[in-house]
Image 1: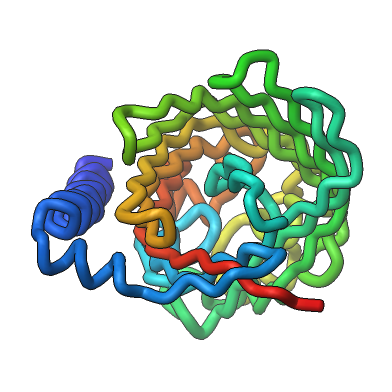
Image 2: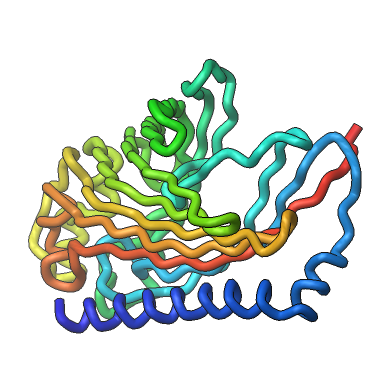
Length: 282
C-alpha cells in the first residue's frame, strides 16, 4: 500500500507540474501567447474540438501496477454554444432532452479488454477478456449552475454482457477568467455478468493459475471521488488535468486476483490539450 501511495503521489505531482508549467508559461510569455493567437479560426455553423490526452491507469482492473494510454479528444457542438461540462467519468453522450437544467439521452462507453500476455506473472491461466462497448442512457440535472448530478446506466457488449451504472456529483467552480475547477463523489454498481469476467475464477482458471475458486457476484462495484482542472489558454486552446480515485468494494475487492496480486485502490491520472475551431459542415 505504501508503495502504491508513493507511485500515485509521484504521478499526481508529475501531472500537476506539467499542467502548471503549460498554464503558467504560455499565457505569461508574450511570444507564446502571440503564437496561440495566430492559430486560424474558420467561421462556420459548428464548433469542432480536437485534441489528445494521455492517462496513467491500472494495468488491469484491480491491478496495483500502472500503464500509459493515449486517447483522442473529439467533440462537436453548434457554433456560439458554450461547451457543456464533462467529467472524466462521463461516457460519450447524445442529448435528446434539454429542459432547463435537465438533460437526458443516449450514452456509450468503451472499456478496454484484458490480455493475459500483458502481465503473465499475475494473469497466467486466467485467459483474456475482450474489449467491451457499453451502451445505454444518461440523465443529468443541474439544481444550481455550479452543481451537476449525473447517472448513466449501460449494458455491455463484448467482454461482459452485464449492466453497470455510474452515479456522480460535481461542484463546478470558475476561478478567475481562465481556470475551472470541478470535483465530487462517485459510485458505481454492477451486476453479476459485468463483474464475473474480471474478478471471478472458475475451476479451469483455478487449476491453471493457482488461485482459489471464486464466484464473483455483482453489487457495489466501487466508490470514489474525482478532481479536474481546466485552463483556457486562448478562446481556442484548452489544457486539462484530472485525478480519479475508486475504491473497489464487495466481490470486486474480495477477488483473489485483487487480494493476492493487486489493490482495491484504483487511481487514474490524465493530462491533455485540445483546440476548438468553427467550420461549416453542410
